[in-house]
Amino acid sequence: MSLSPTFGSLKPSQKQEILDSNYLKFNDGGAGNTDTFAQQYLPEIYEQEVERYGNRTLSGFLRMVGAEMPMTSDQVIWSEQNRLHISYEGCTSGVAGTTSTITIPVALNPADPKDYVANVVSPGATIVAMDSTGFEIKAVVISSNLTTGALVVSPYSAATIAGLAATGVKIFVFGSEYGKGSSTPNSTVSAGAADGYVSVDPSFTQFSNSPIIIRNKYVVNGSDMAQIGWVEVATEDGTSGYLWYLKAESETRLRFEDYLEMSVVEGEKATGAGAGSAAAAGYKGTQGLFAAIEDRGNVNVGFTASAGLDTFDDILKNLDTQGAIEENMLFLQRQTSLDFDDMLAAISGGAQGGTAYGLFENSEEMALNLGFSGFRRGSYDFYKTDWKYLNDASTRGAMTGTSSIEGVLVPAGTSTVYDQVLGTNIRRPFLHVRYRASQANDRRMKQWVTGSAGGASTSDLDAMEVNFLSERCLCVQGANNFVLFKGV
Image 1 (cartoon, rainbow, N blue to C red):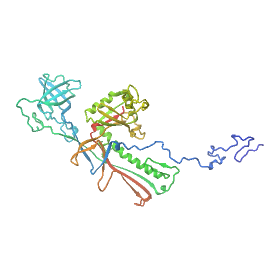
Image 2: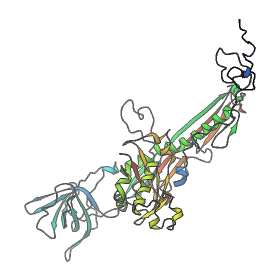
Image 3: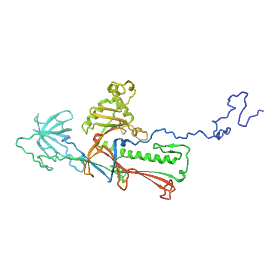
Image 4: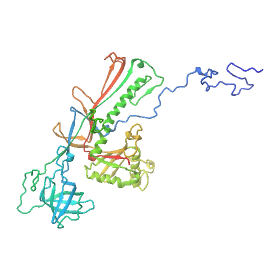
């Protein structure tokens, strides 16, 4: 009969050596195992919370490229200049016997600037007509019909305009020619008149946007406010401590500050029709940055390093047709930023870092710097940076495909516009935020505490409610100078 030790379940040994049968196990205190007293000790706990995502805030883009200005109305309205010279696209042409006709696609709808195309080409004007095949012919206008947009023209180098495409014709006025002793009446011809000199009045395009109210709230009851957590917490704004509600309240504020920027970047006007639309539910929305560029700006789809410099030069050629702002900023997601680096490196004969162009003073020690923060092409300067909002997995960083936003080109500097409220020309950053404010109430970023806990004494609610509110919108002026990069 053998005696089995019971106390501690230890079996003695003749030598001082570690055996499976003679030492206390600190890792076998599972369910039903009571043969170790190690369970009386607390586990080793790290006091500090691990910041595995780094800085999680996303705001800062608008602070880099714009400004914030107060407003007192429900709507902000501004006007932008139209082009100085007269040109039309999408015209049609035809020849009947010896008569050559070019018809402008007029659309007399002053209520909608996009549909308001008036014929302001006068008899005697000299024009250039061209089509997509490269055919070009110059002519003088014999008569002009303001209602139909029909121009009877006589070409200089041929009997008719035969050879010009029937559709997709572009024309522009480059001058005029009149005979000796002729007169040019200075009165504007009314709609429907066939002949006469048209006085071209300067026009502008009017845009508007409305602010939206953004709100958020954090609530913690009085009992939980007295609870002490085991882990020391810290947030991006410097809040730290062993009270969980401090962290939660601080992160609610940080999240709300991000919403202030994200709302005016992603905002969309409520234009959808139907009983289930946001407009039918009483919401008006606001036009954000992306929506404004897609509506009034330029969109580049599928920019990649393999496309090379030719694709980027196409963007520059398009900018030449617009405002041609010399300095521009590129805010890009990671892959698009690398594509720009690869494109610029290829210019240097494949040498990463651009040493052949002296960007790093041709220093061998700098050859390991494979990124480009700025470059100049043609008459344009570009400053490139990563936009965290496009890289973060919780926002647009996880999106791919044709709907993905991969970057945006933003012109630097200011634009001159006519302010409808002030009644004068003013200079404003191309991107700026307008928020509701007056001498009595500033709604740029409001915060107030209600309840009966945490120092508040506004009601009998045994909780602390932290309220956040803002009312704002984004003004994207000169959107024709912006470029939105989208995925394929």
